[in-house]
Image (tube, rainbow, N blue to C red; front, side, top):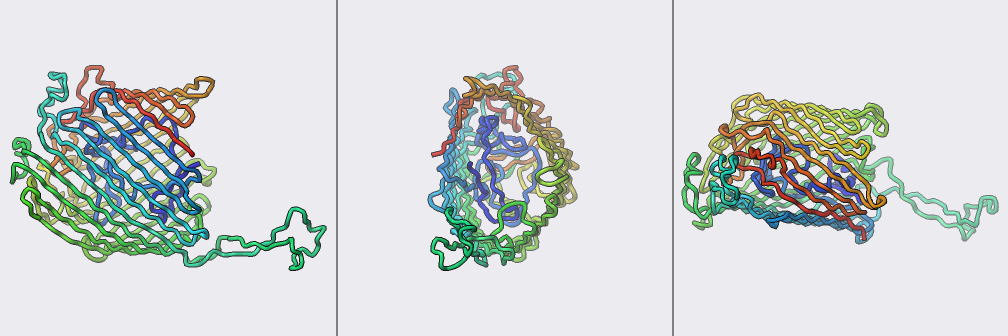
Length: 630
């Protein structure tokens, strides 16, 4: 059995080990945007910019290194895993399309090299030629980490490195939607697009380490070992130094009292953002800011150095929900640099250095094997974004106990004050320039969720004061007032005889649709049927997946900013995106054949997934997932 930990082995969640999803049911989910409980607005090809159709605010405060429009294709320290396996573990996935040489390769590896020493890494390639003119993608990432723990568990260290490279062409969408809808041009590559010669190149890389030290040593006791040939009846005076066949051994037991752990971590990340354009398309940029040069070589480099020191009460206790009381407190120091270049003019446009100090703490209380209360808080006390704070709370209640219950109710509360990001505050480029004096925004959200066996359902309410958004001119703007999002959602994973059913639905209502655009309804349903063959030596599983969302004014995409912004001219939606797959499982290998976007066969071509970006044409994919233990 192989389990894995998230990278941060010492967090508020205590990181209970996770098990791999080895179900044949999910074998054909090779696209990152096809996983999770949301749908994404994206750009006609895999690997390009994307935007969630459900509203999720970032749970963190402070300086943010995320690149939101490419977040699902970028792996950083929060996405890394440590594989715990006594035997070497390997998993390979390869997917190819018929016709245009699209290829996807993913390789995972983990093994224990020595007692307490584990190595894990993952390598991934997504390559897709242009499905419309000028929208090729070539993305890859690689990460590696090493975990070491002493024999007595008093000290543990973890080091990691990651690198992401995203290289995509940007076509700005097709020039005339009717050419595609009415099928006036049969070759998608011949349909005119708004941009030619534009591309985004993104590199996100980083490294770090974390370690902890238990303040007290393990508690040792001396026990007596009795050889099999000796009994209490034959040797009444057993515990004496005069009997050579009796030996004493040391054993380790968990302390009832502990002073906890000291934790330290260091992290570094560097994001390099390049937007290149050989010749700017003036009609496309006319509604926006003034273009300074016909050619573009806008470059932004963002770096962060983070040191964290904390204490927690965990000690030698296991990472599980059974810890009755867990408390932690810490301090973070961040230093970051934002630099913008124009390589065409060979000059630095801006060069900014910032720093900040934040305090954080939290608590977990477990009661009666049925109740868990969690609290977390963070406050930026010095430097950049001073005064920002985050307060989170959770109450989790089993109706019964964790082992035997009639379901689980989880209630979450989150309140935060978030200052504008560096990107929203000040930006200088060939296409856009702004300096804003925005107020911090305040977020307040409640989420109540009930989970029982194969389904869960919930309601979420979010209120935002002074929301910062990107307006119709693709520039940041602040709304002076309150905006709210109400959501009712549910999901299910059910097995009935040989049928598997998985899906989610969500209903969303926004109080101010002038500044937040979301579909009223969206959902996904996947149904499969499993049939053993060859005397149960293999299983064949056909499946059908349907993604659907109602019509709405989806946000448009600005390539020069790598950002989605409001538009109110084009409606998309009310179109079912249907994929059909056939998977064969043979021992530890899953082989599948998939036909995507098959609803196009009806002749309905309103298959837009973002304004002016149709979904890719129907095509066949052939793939294999293979897990190996050596």
